[in-house]
Amino acid sequence: MNFANKTVLITGGTRGIGLETALTFGHLGAQCILTYNWGDHDEKQILQDFERRGALPPIILQADAGSEEDTQRLLQTLKPLVLQIDIFISNVSSALLIKSFEAYSLKGLKQSISYSSWPFVSYTLAIQKVFGKYPSYVMGVSSTGPDHYYYGYDFVAASKVVMEVLCRYLNMRLKGEQVTINVVRSRAIKTQTMENTFGKELEDFVRAFIPDNYWIQAEEVAKAIVALCSGYCDAISGQTLTVDRGTTFFDNTMELYTRFKKAPAILENLP
Image (cartoon, rainbow, N blue to C red; front, side):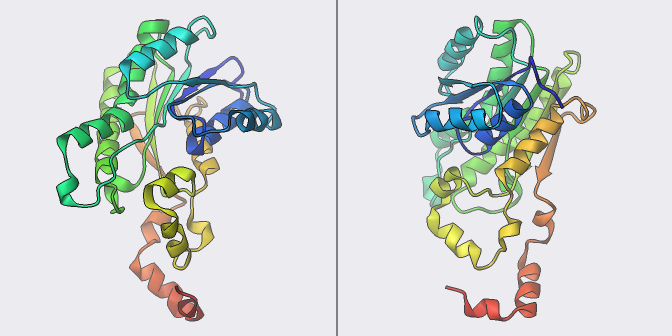
């Protein structure tokens, strides 16, 4: 796969899945544009990572994915720098964490949707208006949260469902525009975002029950995204695909029981 002369825009691209996806595209020749909203990244380190991969230096710009004004400003800044946006990855996820039913609010839900699902649509529309052409590939990053309970994840999961449904409708609406559009789900990944969301204690607790090889790596999700934008998978569109090595199917109480039964010593090491 060769992405030379292709431009990839990734929201929230300075860490986690977004950064790993950018590094994978960059290694294959793409010019990557990474956005961030808060200064919680090391730009010098990112540039070094790209250099180690033999990739072009990325364009790193601040832009609030939930702000229409920021989106327009970002694209107008990019217009003199790149010919077009060939691939758009909607990666930002920001939502109110819910600790009780009383914490539910319409304002919180709207805010969650405005960051975690609406940029999937708004960026696609804005790119066409500014550059006169839709991206050839539009990808959203979701999670298995809509199908599985995660503590405090109520509004995040609801927002991901909105994006996954819109993916199907956008695929239909843009069927005459030569746009391939999909959403990739993944299970929990050991990233700073996970720790910020659930706390360090969760990882320590889970380690007692789940082997390390059950964790999905950001690199695996990145490679799946790149493959879906490679031209080899264009018949796949309007879909939500899960990157989990099949573990979602068998990571359950019965699997825990089977493993503990085979290795009862594990129980002795539980916290």
